Amino acid sequence: MIALDSGQRNFQKEFSKLVDRAASTDPKITRAAADIVADVRKNGDKALFKWTKKLDKLSLTKKSALVSPAEFNKAGKSVSPKLKKAITAAFINVTEFHANQVERSWVVKNGQTRVGQLIRPLKRVGLYVPGGKASYPSSVIMNAVPALVAGVEEIIVCSPATGGAVHPAVLYAAELCGVREFYKVGGAQAVSAMAYGTETIKKVDKITGPGNAYVAEAKRIVFGAVDIDMIAGPSEICVIADESANPAWCAADLLSQAEHDELAVIVFISPSGKMCADVVKEIEKQVALLKRRKIAEKCLVNGFHLIKTKNIAEALELANEIAPEHLQLVFKGSEKMIDDVQNAGAVFVGKWSPEALGDYMAGPNHVLPTAGSARFSSPLGVYDFIKRTSLIDFSQSAFMEVANDIAELAEAEGLTAHANSAKIRLLGKNSR
Image (cartoon, rainbow, N blue to C red):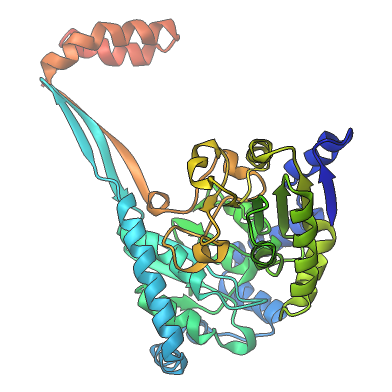
């Protein structure tokens, strides 16, 4: 645990380490990911299956790599009714939320001119769903639903198959989202296959979804050949609370992210010294009961930041500098201070809005900016699965009105061919 007090002399120096937490990539990971990406790009299925066997201990063929209808059917039968109900509820809520993000083409007519913006969905996207330390049906929903709502024609999923099989809940969620093209491959090799295409996996236009450091680095490498959503870092949560908060609840919310990853960042900020102490005690008590205790305990050593501030206003200022993935406001009057939050992937207001609510059931997307990137980026949404095309339509008379201005600007920039493109029409040369 790293304990800080905003009143201490060295506070800003120590706090800046938290703000500048975006870790540089390990050169070994960069080299390894680059080698895998290049191999799959050059050798297709041969390399894809080679790396899957080496890293995931799974032998695949072109036929077995794709989840079959029988496997989807079997998965659907093995998921409990309660879990089906929960997955379906999440799907409905997430779909209803994202329906509000749909953009429409628009055109502005002004006399003989017509300009506008055309909205078109991407044709084919690839979703990466982690499958190493746990199974994530919620990741399927959060990535597939906005693509579905955007109108993407082809949605595929790549996910590592532990023991040769994808978790039934993950397949059930995929089928619910209309995904039938699901491949049992993961890691940097899956990213490369989606980006460049192989004999088995047809290339996509965009790749979204979180993964480990190798997946993140592979996404960085293939960006340009395809679009990507973001380079996802370790999970993060920042909880701001006053003496009115329940320390046990705050501790539980902080641990919800600590159990994700040894490198997760969890921050608790409060003007109350007693609340800080009580939350620490609760964390020590609750972590011992977690199924993923070892992961959470490792996270708590260097990833847990406890910050005492002068007041709530200062706490909010610090949170804006941190720009956390998840920000919980658990203090009196928190609903009136939402406008004070400038940088956060998602804001959870009040004691009845824990981070876990956003992960599964509220509706907003849980694929969020990390490592301080909430300063300039947004949650995954429908807007990530569309492209915008500008529309320009001028009549002859409308063009003639601006032709001289076009030529003037072009010549000022030394672009005589641009200028001639306007002048040749202005002079009526070779007109048809």
